[in-house]
Amino acid sequence: MKRITILLADDHTIVREGFRKVLELEADFEVVGEAEDGRRAVTLAKQLRPAVVLMDIAMPQLNGLEATRQILKGIPSTRILILTGYNDDAYVKSATESGAVGFMLKHAAASVLFEGIREINKGHTFFGPFITKLLPEHERKLLDRAGRSKPRKAGLTPREMEVFQLIAEGKANKQIAAELDIGMKTVETHRERLIVKLNIHNTAGLTRHAISEGIIESNVQLTIV
Image: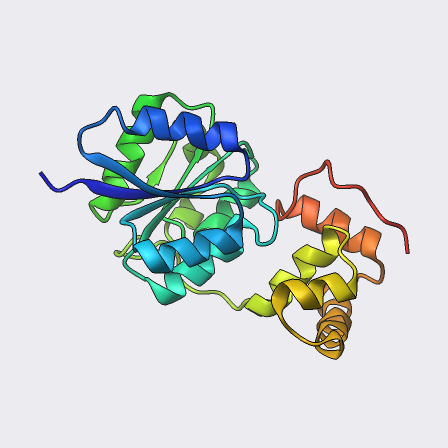
């Protein structure tokens, strides 16, 4: 029997450990890796090429939605199931727009998770019972036969999204340059473009926007500038 290979992406170690233990009880599942942030998830996905990625939304370095976009750009055959504590319809829409083919809440029963993994591995879409109520019929129609959402124009480039998240997390330009291995002037250019595109003119505003979009968690300290 060919097992479904799974990559776990969540910034909480205890959550990843819990999922691993539950998933490995099923004979047709194999957890091949764990990632503690979005950037690591992208790297491991490229290395391991899992059939399914269980992806959290709010993670450091790179949020789960942007990680999803980057993974699918390089490995379009991988199926991504967003597994999160957020139950707002905006998050569901953002997840489908990023290319995820499944979305369910972390407090769902293990049997629902198992069903979701098996369904998306077959090429279907899957939304947990609570999520189906949030996703309007017209949004479900955005999904094509392959289960991926039809592309929409992205407001920010992948690099701008990375810089945006790091700014919202309170990182200084020097730290951002070091983490992304780019120059300070490049960071400043991206910051200026973010200001124009988002029409937000300070770090506190960027942080609030990132929280509202589920890019970072609400416990991030706001920095007024």
